[in-house]
Picture 1 (tube, one colour):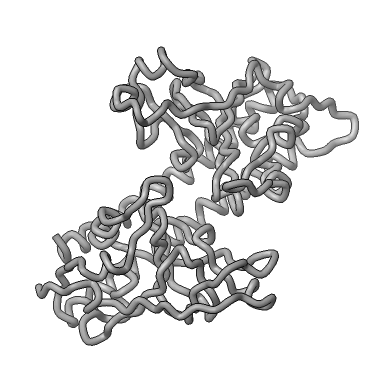
Picture 2 (picture 1 turned 120 degrees about the horizontal axis):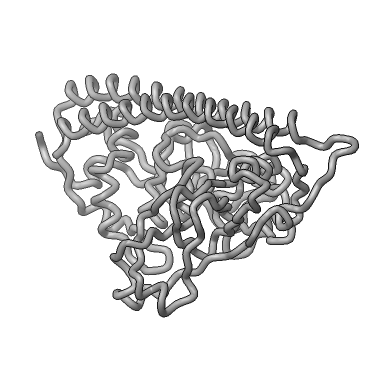
Length: 374
């Protein structure tokens, strides 16, 4: 395999424009890109974006250079404008195959190297002057084409499984609304009234190294990615709990992300599998004995569209506590709740099988990439 500087592999397009009103329909921001997916499913802005944006063309590879640890890479689905916090990349086709190029940019091999040269603490960013000097090994063009064919096939399979998992969630949401939606004669209480406690979280100061690296699971907004959560990327020490306001929430607690850029399109909700500590971007709802965690979790999820429509933009999107606490929840019998919980468990099995199949696809993809680039 031959070694190349990145500026020998890719063109960094810096063409910019100041958006006009019609550009809002073809605008892509970093919030529209999903980590681990090259496909764009959301786009546009309610108003014309402010400030100069990058000009993109259909097929360009979009790379989030700000907070690159989020590993956001996508293929532009149309001509339009892209966030200035990203890069618009195009392949130098004498060195890298155009079909292989997006897969290379989205690979851990490239991203891990790029992340290491990020500068800044609050919003680490990659500069082109540093990125262009990085060196990468590439196989010959014939090998690239063969690998692209295999990798795109695996990628398509992964996207199909993602759609299946999403469809399963929509089915459960519909079942909840059918069983416990607005109904004449039913008695309701607020979400807050359904809970023993509602608590927010906090983050122990990272200036104190002794607070981190222990055995206490610490959950941030980015860790709430599945129906159940048990740990995150960071772990606290017992000293952090003794000396700060951080504290455990018990197993069976429903945690909701209330502050995150992801709230533009998704409302992460999960049930804790074991005691965890949460940060300030989450709220924890510990249900009273007469309400199951699954019931409370889906009572929140069933209101997803309504809650997201009310998000308030601060530094990032934020759900007001009042909007969340006052969600009406039907006072349902434990028998009906258990019937719904059984439906959820069956759906969880289907999602688990799809997730396992998707994980196998990811492993196959990693194996191919590992053979390609080490």
